[in-house]
Length: 563
Image (cartoon, rainbow, N blue to C red; front, side, top):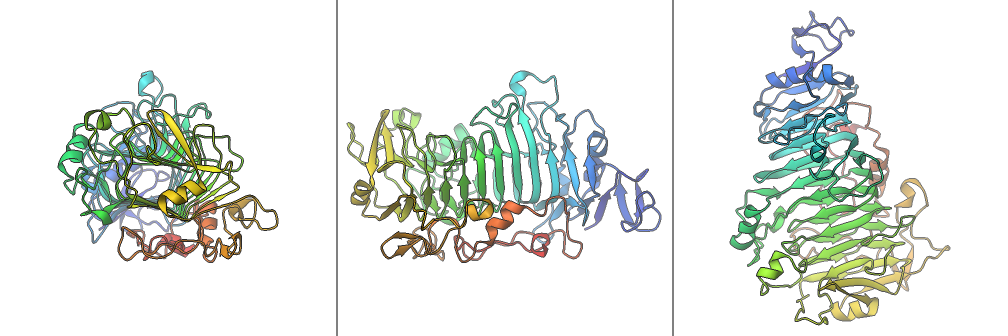
């Protein structure tokens, strides 16, 4: 496992590089290998090697000097479970990979500044550097206009940590552009995206809201592979599973923050199976601000979505044309709608079956029961328009439409959600056959036997600690919801209904009042421009928090912990 250096400031490559010497005279006094372009370094990289980029801007010449600012990541860079390969800035310095809006436009390739054509590397860490301006080169056909920072076709056991993606824009959404992009009908598993910032991403004019634009995209099995899975069971290997997206900031996105292009039916569907209940993707402790479409569009069975914050952003969408997600858990999130123009779904839209799609049209006898967890969430200053309320559930949530559609709600845990300063008395809507029905708190509690909280704004007892910065999202533990119930103790608590060994918090919303430091850390992103820490190992696989949903600060070992 060797250390390989990229130093565009040196006149030529060498094998006697001394990284501690002054710039311009580092060859001759050491024993390490140094290349002057990143492409050359990737070409010789082997299993377990660490590539260090010296600080500075990596434009076309520094990346490799090719026609496009696009680098292929070869399969030879794979690490192992015992020794991850890695690409990072040199300790204490900061590398900026600049696509210069000159990324290769070939639709048969995965577009991006860095890309893996047949699959991404495995057991690999990308950390501590910046990527920007990854639009395809001028002159590409209009319908091929796209962008990408890191794009891959498949991959497993990959870590993306302390990366700053920004200024990714294009003129069309037909190619599903995304700054960090996984496109596969094979494997996308055990991938961790943590402590990254995604900013200023989407349509070229910065205004158009197009749902196909996104900051991070997971493109799962599609078409025939998906149909086969839904009716013949999941094979336990293909598509996205066991991925972790956590402690990231998504800001100023003309589109979605996180998007699934297709469905991850880990339950196998029809009949449902709980064999892989522990394998769902996890999304937690992320902050979404000013996303023009949903913060997250999740299409994965057993997904765990908790301790996330949305601000001036539509909330979460769960479900797809292949039906509702089976046993996803959406709990302890905060949806802050204050100051945002009305959107259709400001908190959670829970799709069961998209009326008129192939599932209902061709298989009308399939079960329509709801399985999932939607609890302990806060919707503050939520917005609505006439056809939707702060929660969209269904269709057929109420079971009283003009069709035979009355889902079994026994396994749907909708409880202890708090609507602060509600826009109207009705907080849930459902739809079937283009007919929407709205429900009040009393109707919901009667239907599900649950408890829902509502309270209008109280200037003398505010919900949040402050109105700006991190304080805008931190919850006051003593905020009184109703007689004897506070925000710090109003959560449902107890065991997670679907995961063993996981407890639900006893507080409401995304932020534990007694452990709220993670909000400051995500917003500050103080690692940008800093580079790695020379006293910590550069290759450091992720460490999972012991109790998902606890609200604790998820510091990873290695560079981030040191700061």
